[in-house]
Amino acid sequence: SQQGEEDPQALSIQEGENATMNCSYKTSINNLQWYRQNSGRGLVHLILIRSNEREKHSGRLRVTLDTSKKSSSLLITASRAADTASYFCATDGGYQKVTFGTGTKLQVIP
Amino acid sequence: GAVVSQHPSWVICKSGTSVKIECRSLDFQATTMFWYRQFPKQSLMLMATSNEGSKATYEQGVEKDKFLINHASLTLSTLTVTSAHPEDSSFYICSARGTGRNTGELFFGEGSRLTVL
Image 1 (cartoon, rainbow over the protein chains, first blue to last red):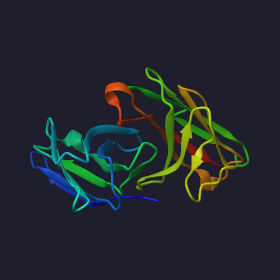
Image 2 (image 1 turned 45 degrees about the horizontal axis):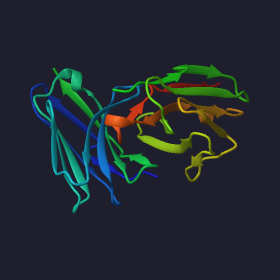
Image 3 (image 1 turned 60 degrees about the vertical axis):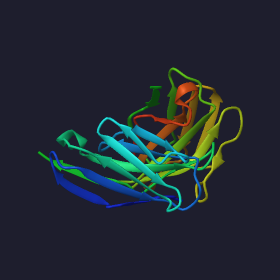
């Protein structure tokens, strides 16, 4: 079963614009992670935010977490064509299981 | 970061044959590995959790006898798709939990694309 739902399902923006993706989940978590997947490839870990954190930055990435609303957002600033990929949130409810959201397909137009 | 190697990256087989996919953690020990399945344009669905030295824990709806998982060492887990059929064609991805300073993070293999004719 999937824990998270992401929106939008697809997003198309111009290079240089910011891209925001949202993730909502259902049960309590230890941490939430964002991953990127290029078509037909494995996943690359982008950032992990723990349940006691509200915001985290990594380069052009900014992640927020609102545990009261069970939601997270990923912001990519000054997007580049190379950012074109699918982005997934993954929720970690404990040591055993990490489940993925439905994903957002981002297209950055040069 | 830690490296997870998955092999083969793609495989084509005839219906009825069995296919083994390997997942190795190259520079760390992974007591727990996860196997996911991904259909085109969809998200990753967790199939099973592989624990070193014990039986795998399968998700609801995943056939244990169909998808055999063996985690014989701290660096290797294998997924065997037995008597494969065309509906088993999919992208299979493994991941391992990081340790040490990477604790909590999942490291993914590059995936294995299975096509059953």
